[in-house]
Length: 287
Length: 181
Ligand code: SF4
Image 1 (cartoon, helix red, strand yellow):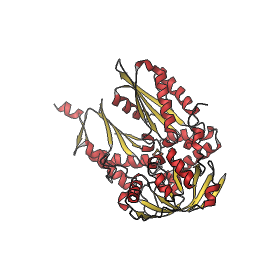
Image 2 (cartoon, chains in turn orange, green; image 1 turned 120 degrees about the vertical axis):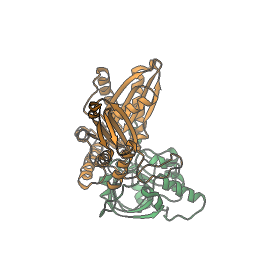
Image 3 (cartoon, helix red, strand yellow; image 1 turned 30 degrees about the vertical axis):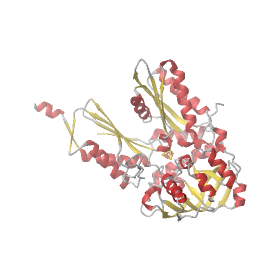
Image 4 (cartoon, chains in turn blue, cyan; image 1 turned 90 degrees about the horizontal axis):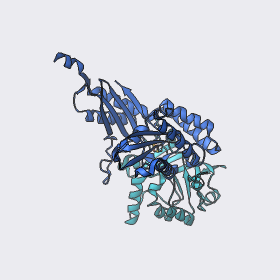
């Protein structure tokens, strides 16, 4: 009895609220180093003169954002929160969901972030505190809590798509789906973009995979050899589309294509493409 | 070509601006995005008076983040223009001359632009911190209850934009529409 008690870790929910608040502010002012490096590298490699100018303005924008504490983009997004909860954790002091939303509320208020959430998709009244957040939680082994806050802008979210392909469509079908989606997104998604792809699972599973794919370090390729090669090939093809920075032409349409896969049904090949702009925000903490 | 243009846009300026020009705008802009467009449109439909003079103005499709104390405005970059397409031809017919946003416009908008001689500029999406530096003053003029979506009058100085669709209907995006090279 005593042993079991010792194993369970208590986490006070006010701690979660405080972390989420800080992470909302951090993510909206500072991009992770891999995203920043990838944009700066692209600036060197970009072939179009106008494209180069746009990329250098995007770099300058990041610097101003961090120095002056002005959000990188005015669309400070809908707060997407991923929680990996160790199964030996016991939360105290309320409800987890409420604690997360309270963190978002405080972060968006105290961080001077834009409130972009409406309570009802058809009636459309602003909730004025950017809640509710979109929360994805997973129970994992152990006693740690991993939190990722990824504010998502809708210029690029609106350009995302799901395709329920047939197994016979195969890898060519997947490539086609990705290229069509990027082409249709064109200038609207604020290129250079990051392309998150989920393949497999069910309708909703592949959508979540595609969102998770956006969180992966941009310099890191998939472990699976086939997928690793597919990521490289698709990045090359996407950049041959010529859409370029700001959609005004060039060789940098995407910074990375990140693909996540999962088992699926004998009758299906779901593919989700979640497009993210160059303001690919995510802040991660593990406690 | 780089051009320095003052707002409101003059007829000869509109004629001289060509797709691909880099332009620095100085003067008065009005902000309006989805919800404000809907209200303007409904007000026009029901013959109500508007507090903003549509004739001759340039609209910036933008909803800023809140200003920190001591600052004029927060982050202030463009939003996707196509969401306004439904309302834009009506506004163009009432004298709207310039629009700043990002992304493609519909055929109907282009036709109304040619007919009424107007220009569509793009500002760099996702560069709201940088763009905010060119904004010198901000006043809310209508629909304050819409928060970030309220109509604001901005005074800008050398605000950097690129002409995407000119008054002849030439569209810069058409050159980069993702056809495989
Ligand atoms: S798509 Fe991204 S960069 Fe563009 S306006 Fe939205 S959040 Fe900002």
